[in-house]
Each structure stands twice: as C-alpha cells, then as structure tokens.
Amino acid sequence: MKRKKKRTSSVNIREVLSKVWKNAPIIITCTILAAGLCLVALMQSGVIGEKDIENVSLLFEGQKITDDYKPDDSDDLCVSFIDVGQGDCILIESEKTVLIDCGENDCYNKVSSFLKSRGVEKIDILIATHQHTDHMGCMAKIVDDHEIGRIVMPKPPAGLVPPTRAYEALLYSVNDKGLRFTAAQTGYIYKLGSADDAPKLTVLAPLPDDDFDDLNDYSVVCRLDYRKRSFLFTGDLTEKGEKALLGRNADIKADVLKVGHHGSAHSSSREFLAKVRPGIAVISVGEQNDYGHPAEEAVKRLERYAKVITTAGNGNISIYTDGRKMTVAVQKS
Ligand SMILES: [Zn+2]
Image: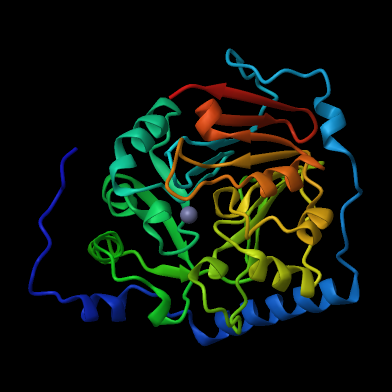
C-alpha cells in the first residue's frame, strides 16, 4: 500500500500532541460530565439494572456455526471479529460503521481488504481501545486511507503510554487529517442509525478519575445494544478493570462477550462473568502466540456460560442479528 504523504519533520511530536486532543467547549464538557455522573448515579441506585436474563446459549443449541451464510435483509446489524492474529479488530456494520481496533502494523492489508469486501469506505466511529500496538498498530494507515467521522481513544496518564512508532504515526495521521481525538468517557452513547430503536453503542469505561497502573485497564469498554441483543467489548481489561466496573454496578449483561485480553488468565474473572452471563464468548487471538493465550483456566470459566469461539480456530467471525435471532458465520482467512 502507498503512503499518501511524507511527514513534515518541521512539526515535532510535542507540537502534534498538544493539538490532537479535542478541546470540548466548557459547556459540552459539563453536559457530558453531568450525563456521565447522572448515569453512574442511576447505575448505583439500581434504576438502570441488568437486562432480563435470558440464556442465550439455549438459543444456540442445535444451531450450527456456518461458513456459507447469506445474510438477508432482516440482518441489519453485523459485528465481525476480523482475524488479525494476536490482536483485536472488530467491525460493527449498521447504518453507521464502527471499527474498534485494527491489529498490528502488518495487519493493514487484511483489515483493509475486509473493509473493502464489505463496501466500507467511511468509518463513522474509529475506536482505539488503548495504545498497545496489537490494537492500534496500523491505525495510522486506516486514518490515512479512509474517511473518518470521529476517533475515540482513552487518555491514560502519559507515563503508561509506550512511545511506539505506531502511536507516533497515529498522532501524525490524525493531525495531518485535521481530526481530533475524543477522550473516551463513561456515559457517551453513540446511536448507529436513524430509527428510534437503532443500535446504540454505550461507553462504560474508563471514568475520568480511574487510577490504574496497567494501560490495559484503561481500555475503552463499550456495550452495543440492539433490540433484545447486546454485545460487550472489553479491549484488554484485566481483573482490576473488571472489578472497577462491578464496583459501580455498570450494566454489563450481554449476549456476546469479546473476551478481555485475548483470553488471558488474569481477565474474565468468575465475578465478572457471573454478571455478564454471555451466551457466546469470542476470543481474538493468534495461533500459537507467545503469551499462551487463551489460558486454559479462563476458557474453563467462560465455558460455564458461553460457547467459546476463537479467531485462531475459525478465522473471521461475523455475528448477524435483527435484534432477536443471531447467526454466527465464519470465514477462514
Ligand atoms: Zn491486546
């Protein structure tokens, strides 16, 4: 693939860093903060509680995962876990398009050809769950080559962000394109269509005053709701981040869980899973990776609730839904 332009060396990274974050007007900041606090208060008071608990694994009993599914008109939401090896990349297609993460630097061709095959030219919301390269390694190129509506990323303490080439390239690309990062914050809700019941993506973490010592725990966590179905995306959240979500009684119940941190033993705690109660758990992981992901004990905990599927074993995994029925389709990559 081609780079569109050469970076101008006259602009240094400090200068770029000072420009690339959105400075929301004070009134908007206050409204968002108030909405966030209000949501937290509602969660704590239990007004926004768990959704009706329904055992989705039952829904899948006898239903095969298919490799030749032809979606019909009723499948108006599709969530694809693109196989980027050891990393994450999730495409949400509805009236609006969301891309969560994009894998390592060398995954660009894979991701862009998947986007092409789905006719995606504009990414309305691009989310980097956190600044590790297995999540945003090729995001600079994604920004260079696509129309981007909005780019969302957490803003953890600067000392936790590794100064990688990929991160630096992303800052330059965002700046060159005149984009600004939106700092991910609990309480943001993105509506992905015009209908009253269009899919909604709600940011559940991080909170502005979160204080973790691991960048993974600043991962953007969001829940996608469409009619009776929901998906939970947890980036590389570990047990600590899970505890924080449980501590403030966040509504994390979901039919499909994008398993945290590639199925690491230190994520997907018992308490967390008891609250999420997923019917399907998707692990985005590379074959024979150096980390031993997914950990056997994590898979065992997940299997108490969910049918566990991995990108290493299945390739690209797409889940189609009309907000009620769900079909899991796989495509070897
Ligand atoms: Zn990761």
